[in-house]
Image (tube, rainbow, N blue to C red; front, side):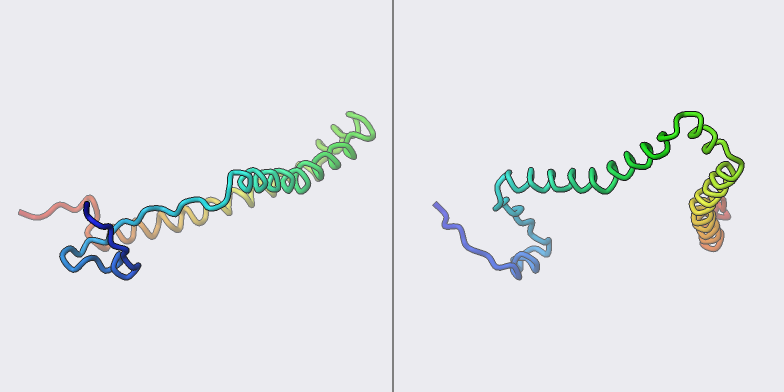
Length: 122
């Protein structure tokens, strides 16, 4: 049987001198057990619960403390509606402007390089 030769990292990157193709190495084996994976998932779930769900629960509880009528009145208040409209305008603008800039630059680049619509002259 052929003896397996231990290769160095540099040999794997450069190749073996015959071929210039980079060698593919076997992926790292997991050294930690599955317990660490579940502990990290638990920590992430706890973090999300404390940072997102707990404040959301407090906000909804305080909003409904005076009843549905007070909640509905606060939501449909003139200033609340204007604040929501301004927030939506800011969100759409924040998404639309980079898209338009990218589209403009792409079209400009296409025009400069000959574009998809330009046909070779015969």
